[in-house]
Image (cartoon, rainbow, N blue to C red):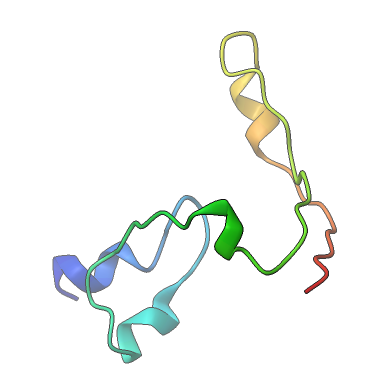
Length: 67
């Protein structure tokens, strides 16, 4: 597997390998103005990056967004 495809196997712990079958072979980071967001917001996890224990990033949570 080449370097571009191996990135998608583990994106911050999430298997995004389905992305290798689409148009995007390179990761793309973009920003969206807040007035263009069509959903409400939802806090999934709030971390204190200065005081946290590294094991605190291992979590699962349910969330819901309204469009």
